[in-house]
Length: 334
Image (cartoon, rainbow, N blue to C red; front, top):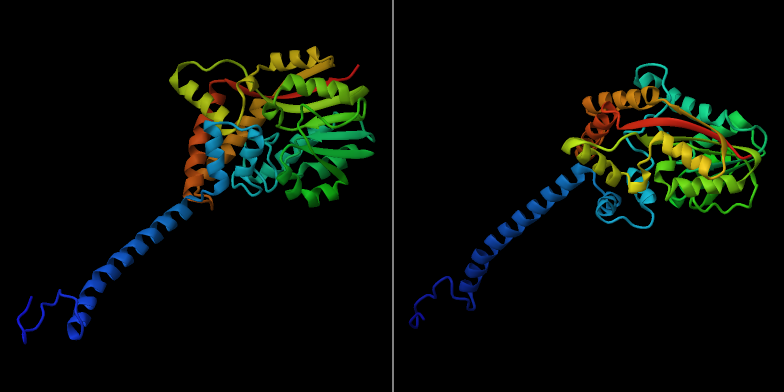
């Protein structure tokens, strides 16, 4: 302690001028530390925003570790309604291509695929679109088939809400339901259509059995699907296959060959089962367009582009090694 009449050392907190000196000296490093903390927090927030990741994406990642009861809905919640990888705005299918795969043909290819599948259905009847995505395809189905009634079934209620304007345009009734438990009476439908959804279903066999039940005699089922023609061999194939199962929320039972899918349709009682494999006109050109898009730095967050490039390499490997293929299936209810 200082003797009477001597000034206090500046680090002693007392009254008068000494207090002001000490407060000023201690406040400066506190403000500096706070400034550094805010700067670091701001930098972290900017870095996180740059990745483009959202709560939906984190839930998707969590679902890859532990699948919930509705993995397909979680996947498409994460993809969202404006995915930069969608070949054309609003379309979630891979397209049926006439050329090698260019941006100029993308929307026409998506429309061509739906129109080709829908053209196998009977005209003027009750048509059920199972797994209708964002509803973009429903006006085209309505235009192609001119149904008396069109019902759009989707397990993801948010997709039905997102596509409500398109459903109104198609005069389609939205129904939130599981494809393996359709809330429709026996023999209620003249045709069922499903575009790139069957591999998400809880069970293809259960879906085919429901199709048999819901279709009237003579009714037609027309779908597209992705088959697994052989089991992966080697680390690269195995890693790619397992990653795609988890990324798209698929169950191991989704891996079926084209022949097994056709056999499952026949086992459910469906007849006149016709399968056309056409990966060369679907998967190959779609991958080419997506690859070109990614190589040109699309307007998407860094995290999205990075994840998309990894996914593209994996799917491309599965396709080039002929592990996967694309098929059109048509069948009838006797």
